[in-house]
Amino acid sequence: MKLKVVLVVSLVVILVSAGSVGAVKLDSANLTARSLGMGGAFTGLADDLSSLYYNPAGMVDSGLLGIQLDLGTMVSVSDELDELQDIPDKINDDSISDALSVIPDDVNFMGQGQLAANFKSFGVAYTNKAFAESSNQGSSASADLFNLQEGVLSLGNELIGLPFGVGRLVYGMNYRLIKLEKESYAVSSATEVTKIESDDDSFAIDLGLLMNMTDNFRVGLQIQNLIKPDFDLSGDKEESHYDGSTWVIDSDSYSEEMKLDRVGRIGASLRVPIIDLTLAADIDNLGFLSDTKDDEVYHFGIEKDIIFNGLSLRAGTFSQEDGDNYLTCGLGLNLKALHLDIAAASDDRFDKSVAAVVSGRVKF
Image (cartoon, rainbow, N blue to C red; front, side):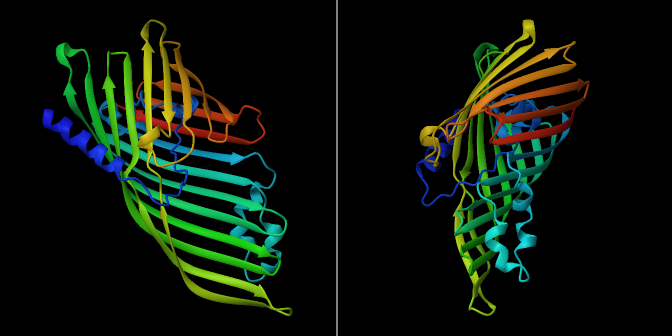
């Protein structure tokens, strides 16, 4: 038993100390309706299939058999969102002269679909996420579109049981196979346009720990990308320029290195059974456990079960690195083994971005 503890702790220390050079942050957060409704505070709660994304140690509490489907999006509050999604269709050989006017300014989009299943503490998942962002300064513009597909294998197990049955320490690990596709557009003037298409495959390993201090109080830790995915994106590059009478297109091969940041996160949850209430809190981008230089992000959430636990009311808040605060809310319908959840989030001024997720899960 002691050997297990030594091996896990040593692995964390060695890999976290390895550091990162030239890491690029690509937001790959997996949203589920229950976790979003609670402000994203789920690392210390982690008691259903959402654990696979927030803390794989929680897979030990995911039930005998289960399946979960999540669909969600987070978008800028903008009337130019359709233009961002249509960029690949609008910038082509026939309309390349309009490239500068096609790309909107300061618009972001994230969409996802994910399917997960478990048998006891073993889980599998497939996720497909699309990200897009654009910028337009009038004389120049750029847009990046990413597609991220992941296949995930997850396993949780008990590490040690505390004396007198007062608690336990469990761990979990994710092995993620990742395919990243990137499409970029850069317009340096009305007569110069660059288009790049590239892709690569890689893998990552996540580690989670969960301590049951009592039956109702838990603390958790997750290190996402403990072993970080390292992409060598390769593909094609097209540079177009107008020579005064026609557009000239030069094609060449392209390569780019990209790494995803290691991100550390801790959380705690408290269940108050006498009033069927759960409180949760997380800290993201945690100090030395993370590569990112962004500020720490705080998540707070609450879940209240009513009508004999048939209905769950959720609310929460979280901060972003840019200082904006977001408010979340959610609703869960619990019908024996079937659970249906919806959640929404927005910045506190309701004018920057919004998110929405629907989830359905069966848990036996």
